[in-house]
Amino acid sequence: ETGVTQSPTHLIKTRGQQVTLRCSSQSGHNTVSWYQQALGQGPQFIFQYYREEENGRGNFPPRFSGLQFPNYSSELNVNALELDDSALYLCASSLREGGYEQYFGPGTRLTVT
Amino acid sequence: GQQLNQSPQSMFIQEGEDVSMNCTSSSIFNTWLWYKQDPGEGPVLLIALYKAGELTSNGRLTAQFGTTRKDSFLNISASIPSDVGIYFCAGPRGGGADGLTFGKGTHLIIQP
Image 1 (tube, chains in turn yellow, red):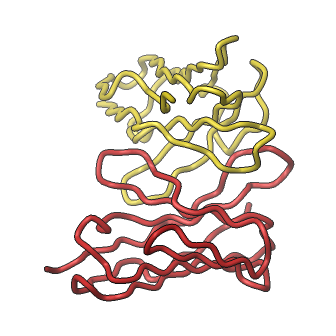
Image 2 (cartoon, rainbow over the protein chains, first blue to last red):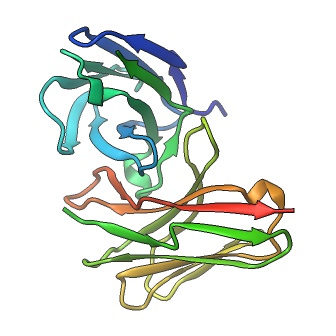
């Protein structure tokens, strides 16, 4: 069984640029959630995708957007990057019919300068 | 939104000691999850609790779903160096199959 994978591992961007982060869900899972984790904090929910549609969103502006593909993999896109967007971005996969248990990937460390 | 408060914020213990930490909420939760995060990695699910009063073990770890449904507890017995890390509690944000809300974590440090 393959776990959740994310790419890239690290990324450095300049303020105002755009970034795309990628996630492959664990085999058998149909739901992907994205989280932002600032240093010293718990993960903050960005949004969730199920059946290629957004299924719930946290308190993040529209410049945070996403996609889910037919193979359940997902992308997180962030436009007009701000310095405060520097964080660890985590992807978690789950089975919608399987309760609330979510399984996380290793994350992408984004630094905005 | 729902907030989870974890205590203590950090713990310095000796190897072999037992550890207790807790998580409280101002609102009722119907699920509690406990995760552990090592530096530079994603959180790893340790235990999931679905019923008030439930007590579930995973090796040396034991977690309890509080009877008020507003708290949960995690105990680690006979701590070892690899227990070092940050422990997070989490619960559903509400509104159906949605994301999770996390506490700020308890940082466990073990002195040999």
